[in-house]
Image 1 (tube, rainbow, N blue to C red):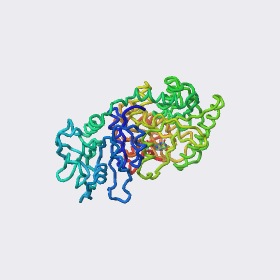
Image 2 (tube, rainbow, N blue to C red):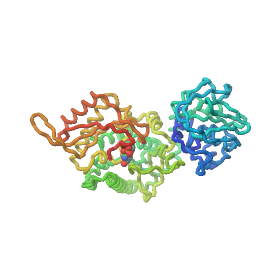
Image 3 (cartoon, rainbow, N blue to C red):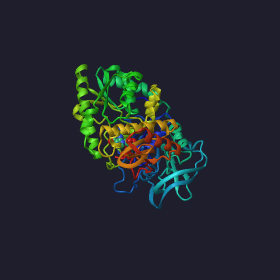
Image 4 (cartoon, protein in one colour):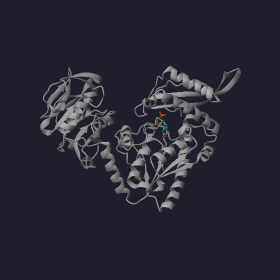
Length: 516
Ligand code: XMP
């Protein structure tokens, strides 16, 4: 792609992805590479500038990330952030030492070099976010102090060598003028152009897909969610009906979802869609299974079999399929190449895209460079229906991980009704789009109730609503009492089989979003 780009070298900070997002919000493409990337890998991105991220290590640690100091000699503008500043100081002949105590949180910084283009349009007193243990005490030759806190270095620069660095985190919202600083770096110092727009992305991606697939055929597993749908629409734009989409009813979809998704994808988006009702097959495999991970495995494996069969059939009809379209997003790509160790698997997330390598299909992943909100922007530009773009995430194993204990057709039907009421009422209250996920969970607990003059003995349903940025952490949502009241009374009155509703007030961690 011939857009301007900024390369961010990741030294392991929890904020690295945020730097990329802040720059992309300025319509400039930016890409995160592990700090160990070779100079050739960096050059391949045709960067206009390089940012060295923060990181948890000390430059003196034996396991300090092993970046090549030659990145400072590439004749490109460099901005060091936090650890990035220490890396620059350490490798260019200055001195870093362990501070007596870690500085973490808000700090006041005074700009010393008021003429520095990096600080253009910024006040001289800044409120910033700090998060570091080490500090620079001697600056490398040729560098001067550009900003300081009451007793430490907060910014250094060597404009001749085109290297700037700050000790604080401009990418974090708590740093009030952080975006201005990043804009100054990207536009004033790197001279990048704001050419990373949805229209440009769509045009160049469609062209690239067309070239990649040539006159081949592709298939795509759709879930009705935003990622796979946007990916499919892009590929459809490139190769038309040589893309066949497959949507499988695994028996644990939401109420009417099998039909709603078909309507959206086939009628509204014009996709060439094969809808497979495999619900009986899935439910019979799930009979008697109560362990959450086993449920995931059963659904994952069964999905692969169904999809495999369809792929073989489509392959026969079309004379061969060579490509598989997947809605992989950028955070997954960064996660798998990051300098951080693999995080412990709490739950194995089988997405519908998780297909076997034995299929020997080549991958097309048009969203590999995008964050979730960017996917929505692209979808909007493609004029896709808002109910697809705004749909809350829905797990691949569907309602199976929201029915605790055994999954039976009766229980699925109960939960479908309860889920439908929750979604409807949350939408009615105008809250659906502000909430990351809101749903019902069917508990294997029966309790006594009274309805009219009758004693009841029926299931309990839990309501869960959480705010989250990315599903990794989450806070429970204090839903308005009147919304909870309506949901509860509708569920108990309208669904024969549930007589008690409780509200889940657990955050993640220590809870998880799904109950299984
Ligand atoms: P947890 O429950 O791990 O969920 O806090 C985090 C996010 O992941 C979704 N989730 C899944 N998605 N397959 C999926 O495709 C799964 O097995 C799965 N389990 C959880 C969950 O809905 C939330 O958005």
